Length: 175
Image (cartoon, rainbow, N blue to C red; front, side):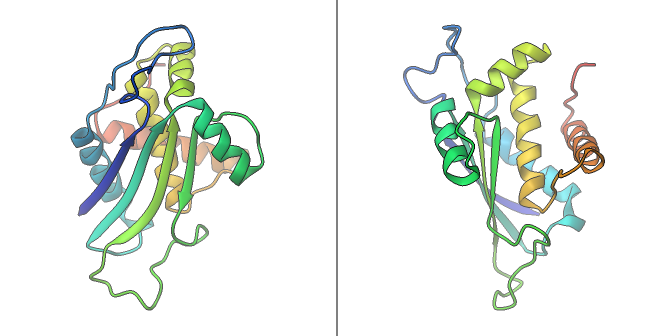
């Protein structure tokens, strides 16, 4: 399975990439690692994915200010959040439109993660930033593929799937 992942690092590449506590951060996950992980995750989620030779998606690493603006604009919640997902396909049942050929790549959408919020959550949970970022990336990816969590039962299924995806790339959340 091929994946074309665009990583937009708007946070770590900025000259002032510091946490609210004043700690400067470096990007703990390379673009090639992200590509490898998303490829493995999509291979695992293949039954949930529309059939295509190549999948495309964007991962944007940003700060609280940008994600708050997006959250306000698209979800009418004027506050920062950890991850937003903007699915390119019909969310309830991601399918390739009939007019597209099966040999074309499919753009799944965009996952936007606030590194500042991820950092605070990682500190609070007592695990590395890389774990939190990957956890949020799996959450966003599942949303792109039509997963949702309107109730506690579906949230638990989604969280279990996220944990399984992390284990596929040899990551685990500390207990």
